[in-house]
Length: 312
Image 1 (tube, helix red, strand yellow):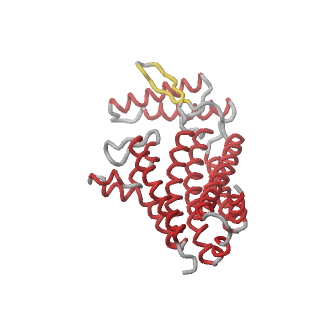
Image 2 (cartoon, one colour):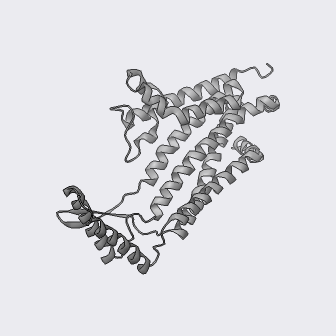
Image 3 (tube, one colour):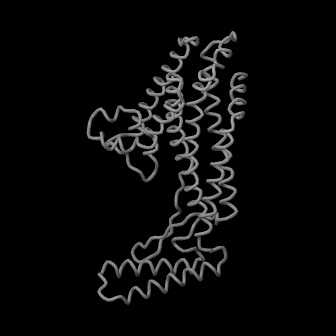
């Protein structure tokens, strides 16, 4: 625990750690501002009724367009029914910006940026020590090398957790203040009757799947930084996997070996509403593949670090 604390202090002693946190928070604030700026104000019953009446007038005007197909007429009539239902039940318009939509947008942004910044810290935390020569002084202590390396990995991951936690708190507070926090409701017409459905939110599931993906990318960057002693190389290769992994997977998906490649089993593709790139790829199989690769990445990192000649 003492070694983790030391590494934690070292991380926050770097300017780039604070700069990355500020950038994430600025991004969150900017997205909140943009979402609020383009959102139509529907905070009162009068404003909700006004916006829905505008929609109702638009739909009724569309019915007068010449040459409408039967399916178009049916669609417009259903929209009219749902809009009248919204007016009667004081519901916002179908395109209203809601708390859940904004939080979902912010979570996607935060997870992506936090993943990149955590990867940068993990890639440089070992390589920078070798680059400056301070690793020699660190290894002169009567401490097992694996404990030193483990403390660096844990501190890197804790940095990502701290970055995520602070960003999410700011995102939730801002979304709560600026947007309607009521239940997200979608409407549909069944047999001529309007039916309400509560939109399920999968925030926790999406966070867990993205956290697993971030963890894998982080330990991959950590391994590269440990082996090559170059944070630039480690970050570059990791970014290629992070940003181009899906494109590469689509290209090789037709081959049988594709499902055994780490980035082809990225767990984020199993988020609700998404489909796996490789046909018949299951979440359980992808989890097993990720565990195997995680063990390999960590084994390579620790084995190389323990055996490395620091005088070289």
